[in-house]
Length: 104
Image (cartoon, rainbow, N blue to C red):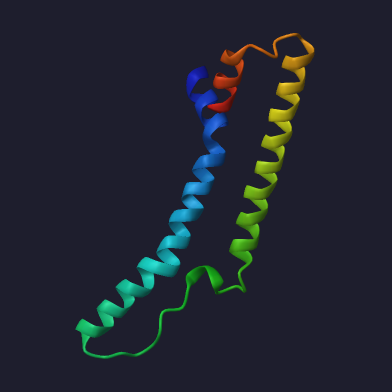
């Protein structure tokens, strides 16, 4: 169970970014194209596609930007602290720590 928890803890930031990217791609590219095709073959062009994430004034995008921005900032601080501690401990030439840390 420990390996599963470590994987989730170390990969939640990229997963959030990919989920947000998939939502944006659907809402601004796939959704409008699919909506237009349905209306063309349905026989009537009634209304234009309205992005679902902009319904509440873009609050979704503001919230996701905050989550991703704060997580990137804290991850940057973690990396700086890790590099400082490695340097202070005399491990500044040890590339194995750098490679293992950059995968998280």
